[in-house]
Each structure stands twice: as C-alpha cells, then as structure tokens.
Length: 151
Image (cartoon, rainbow, N blue to C red; front, side, top):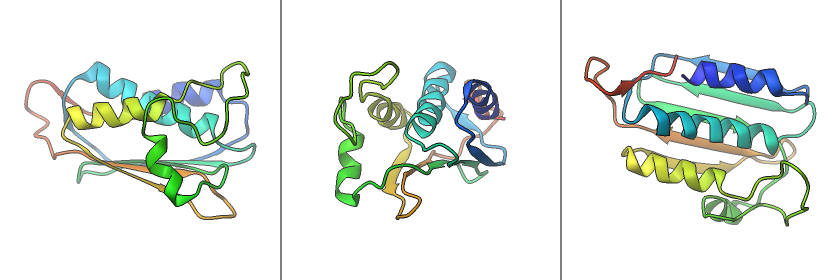
C-alpha cells in the first residue's frame, strides 16, 4: 500500500523532487482504508510543503516503523506539536488553490492513535528544513485477519 500511494503521488508531482525510498516488509493490523488515508496524508503533506528540487524520504521497517521526511521551510522545534492539531499550519493561510486546511497531520495523528501507534514529529535543521514524521506501530502478525501490509 505504501509503495502504491507513493507511486500515485509521484505521478502527480511536478516539483522535481528527489525521492528516496527504503521499503522493508511492514505488517500493520488495522483498518486498510484508514491506514491508506494515513499514508496518503503523510505523502501529500511531504510534497505540498516541500520546495522545488527538494527531497522526500519514505522508509518502512520490519520493526513496525514508517518514516516520511521532507525538505522545506525551516520549522521551529516549538512549532512542531501545533502542526499535529486540527486547522494548524506552519504559515498563515494564503487562500490559494490546493493549500489545504491544516487537517492532514491531525488526521494522521488520530489514525495512528486508533491503531496504537506512537507518532513522533521533529523539525529538520536548516538549511534543508522540512519535517520528519515517524510512526511506530505495534508489530503485527501478518497472518492475522485484518492485517495491512504496505508493499
């Protein structure tokens, strides 16, 4: 699911981003639809708030981790927790098409909580800037019904 979401996102990108992916098998027990929203929201956020010619990094691990990182505006470490709250943004609204309402990361945080995942977010240092979101899911038995396995 993760690789498919990334490929769909890359098909729409026109920003010349460098994409680095390290995808190991990751089995997560939960709701496939919600987990799909989580991945798409993370990737959409990483692309939307990147800079032209920037970088997007996506990694999964068999230890239950999903990490999405991007380059972009430098964010103050004290501002990072606010970005996980509904309707919070790193910059004032510009009222331009496609800018978002500030819900993407709060939805990610809610879905993560519903699946027992621990979410950490950190601002990337200057000069690259951007944000790194790491989710640590409870390790799942891929044979159990209802498990989701990002490919």
